[in-house]
Length: 313
Image (cartoon, rainbow, N blue to C red):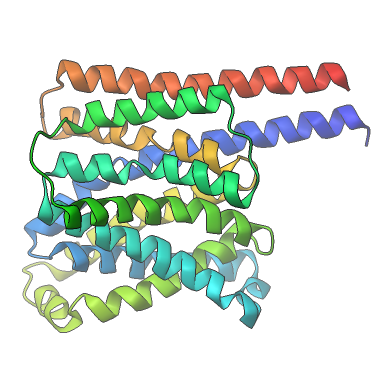
């Protein structure tokens, strides 16, 4: 296999990785539909999180069983890495995010959550020695500005505790890209997602008041319909997007992945418009354009960079 063939294969892999991360953002953007439905059934936010990650863990384990049974054999020395992914990222950021929602407006909580690309970029520079380019910085600014406009600009006063909790959600969210990239150097995406969600599920079951949650399931009028909806929630808002995102991280820089994933609030806004008949404001429209501009800019820049590399070779 010659050098040119290797470059073409690498380019194709990066394109597929980019599409997978954008796909993940689109699926995450549908989360509001499922959260609202389960909330209407009486489940509190932490219980919804537990339902989502526990069932996702089951799905991921089944996938790993089918794809590669040997993937269940992880080294004991890597357990802290998966604890970091499960507890430190998935569970931590979700708990911080829902706590922030209870302490401030939804828009303010969403803005703080989407500081995640900033933390990813800073951690990528620190741990992976990624270069901070002008194009990345511009795309980061466009994406964050777009998230602010899409989420809404909150003029409310914010407490220091609320600010720290909100920023914690962004850091925890961003940590998945960093720890996930490290884990993918040693294990397949299927192993990474399975063990990440297994640990997240264990943690969530400790804090979700499981007895109360079981009583809510027992008290529903149509148990099987609710169970089916919960399975669908896990599949659409966790299994598909996290698997796609993790597979994408295998070929896309963590910092780029974090910016590409900001397509999520844009998709959430569009779901709000078309599913819940929520109004699309001028500011939201501008935010959507800024997020799309960031995604296009990253891909155009990456394409130009690859072409220059090809010319040199």
